[in-house]
Structures are given as structure tokens and as C-alpha cells.
Image 1 (cartoon, rainbow, N blue to C red):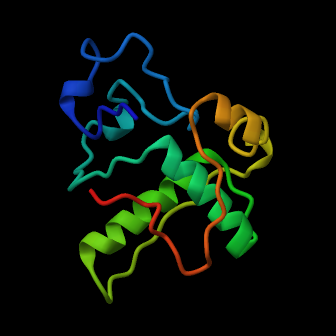
Image 2: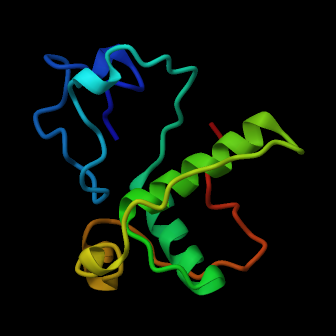
Length: 133
């Protein structure tokens, strides 16, 4: 994911030829918008397409939540934040999209395999697919 909020090296003029090389559509803004110019961002976490795929399937199987790629990526970030902050911390995230608009990619095993992504099933207590920072 390429996001100017994550690092200034990924800002306008320093980005890849195809900045949208992710199945998590709409994530990875490559310019600083007016609503974020004054934002005080303490830190950020990177997430991968593979983590989003696993999280979406984990949430569907274990929580009954049919989320989109942005929501799945937000949950990946929430897990990383929880690990960084430690026990007793309260983490809040937004589930900003549903899975319906993502069925042809995020929930399509053929599409995922064709794009080098693995579909797997996760145990209710297992979030080991969320990589360490």
C-alpha cells in the first residue's frame, strides 16, 4: 500500500507507475488532502493485500461480518495497534464498507489465486496471519 500518510517518500512525484497495485481499492492515497493537512498523525501501520484477504475471511467465518477490503485493512491495523499498545488498551476502528461490492475480488478464490493471494480458513482464536511490524 502506498500512502503519503505513512511516509513522505511515497508522496506525489515519488510513487510507483501504478500506485493502485492493490486489491484494497480506495486505500493508498498518494496526495495530501485538505482535511489531513493539519492532522497530527502519531504513527501508521502497513498492511498487505494478503492480510486483508485473511482478515476478511476470518471476520466472515468467525464473527459473521461480511466486510469490504477497507474494513478488513482497518481491522489488520487495529490488531497491529493492539499489539503495539499492549494489554488493557482500547482500540477502535471503523468498518466502513461491506463485502457486497468486493465479491468479485476479495471473496473470489479464482481472482485471488490469479493475483498470487492465498485463501485460507482461520481458527477463531488465531490472528497469526497479521504480520508483525
